[in-house]
Image (tube, one colour):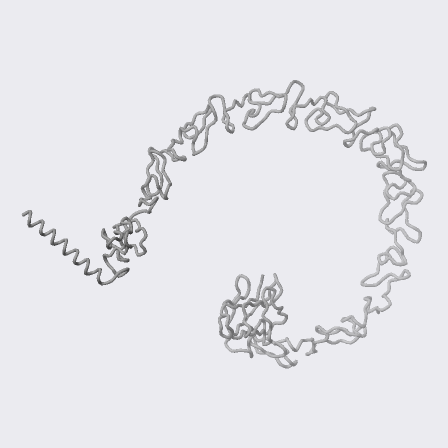
Length: 550
């Protein structure tokens, strides 16, 4: 059996060589299936791929390079992709599980950790902090979280830095808040210079008190005299906790004053002496004047102090010789001084008042120069609708009195007894005898059913949106739009349009209108209670129009 097996191997070898020579004679380069494609003398470590004629496993051309299985199927002769994961340093790795390339190349997990689904996972509930797995419940350098170090002398218990009794963790230190000058009572509460921390409270030396973060002697401190923030006035001293002014002065209004001579504080604080002189704390007024409410006044002529400090003259009285009286030419009418020659309430005497629109002239009630007395009422016969032309003629309806004649204002016509606008009155449209059918409008002397009546048929009704009457996009075809009830109060009536090309036209109520974005074009006149918007055809399908309400 051994000789027969050897003959089979020899026959297989020569059969393979014959097939190789047959295929290699059919072409070269990219069309060759087994030819290595390598030049003579090329390295055997760089095998070609099958698409370029390289061998799938081994064997190049004569003197050429042999292919490798790793490169098989790579059309460019490069490195074949990994079946799982990716290449890191030329080696295929599974980044889902690789502890040295966890989630990405070169991302090494800490010692004892595993890579699970591209995440480094430490055993036993530990946490990955840098290159180590640590227990953040007990780690002094990673207490509760990575890079959170406990102060010296502290322990990490259940993820919290605990200082030894009776100390407290303040920043990066364990301190005794009962005695610490920097953390007295609580963290960051620093005691002022010269103070000590006793039982968690800053204590200044005897006779001193903490004011504004400083130890001060409130018995002598000018800024904190007696108590904190009680500043003594300029020139004063703080003695035994009280502000003392020099020369027996008195503190009034935060200043040291001499109440013996001060005009604002004569004899006592806030006791003024206006118009007089303060002598030894007494207000001395000039001869003929008396002191009333801190002022020196003449009781013979002062309106507010007439005859004495308590008497004030009423209404338009004056003070003369110490008595409240009326000025020359006026009469006292129940404590009101009146000029009986011109006062409407007291015309001719105290009991007569002028009625209606009469005036008091020379002590008599009369009409003004351009008016006539019509049964006790003064009327301008040129303009008074109740007395037009004479006292007995009254204008009817809504007619006006114009130059003594009843008539209608410009733009209106007399229909019966009333003035109407024939251009807009639906009961008298174009003429006094022509009424529009019920529900129709009169616009420019024409009865109309709606804004687009007579302009286009079957217009599209535009409804009110959040920002007004908006149509967008318009499309490219011509459209006729009808807007009713557009009466904005938050903005001026206007039409805004955008993205109209040069061929697209815009008409409002039959009149050509420019397309203006942002500010738009003002709308000044409605047609049959609204507006008819005609948009011509155009190329910009996303164009739009808006009658804004905001």
